[in-house]
Image (tube, helix red, strand yellow):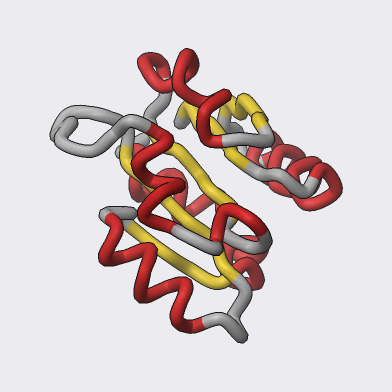
Length: 120
């Protein structure tokens, strides 16, 4: 079981993410803002961030708001983006996210992606 903090502003998508990851055996804490994730990060293996919408406008600021920069032993990060916004993927990788995949791929392979990052 991988402990996931999911930062997903869209509650409908967040519900799908949470349900899929729970069904795959992961523990999920769902929040709508990066700043709200901070108190949960000490127990997280993976932080998932939905970069569709406002969080994708500046992936570097979103990553900074998580407070993970420079923490080599902190949780791994996984970001999802809309496949039509390739520049968001590029900026997210430059910001420091460990893995950045389209939402559609995450919905197909999310449990496996999380397991791979979390080491569980």
